[in-house]
Image 1 (cartoon, helix red, strand yellow):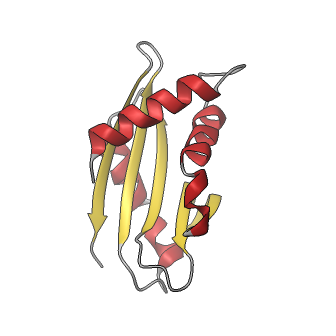
Image 2: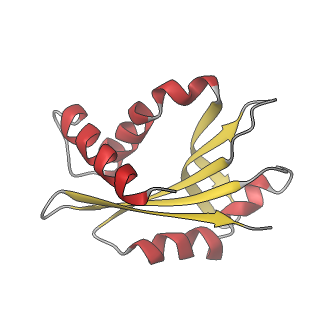
Length: 127
């Protein structure tokens, strides 16, 4: 839930890992995957998960017997954070997790191409 720390860490990892291409969604998606590499012992990561009325960019589902929230991540370029969280809700990305009984975090990571700044918004989802 520490949005500024998440944004700063993602920004740093993005700078370190995006050698050939920086300004595209795939580059940012790979950055997120690398940032959460050590989380694979707790989570199964799914890219472009078919959901409700679209595809969630990245979803982290907790492995069995792990007490962690599921995480739905929407990546954006030059947008506002509220728009991505709204997209998760209006396109019903939660629908893909309807049988999941634990907590869910909705996460937006936005990247501003001009100043290469990253922002993050995290919201707890209540069923």
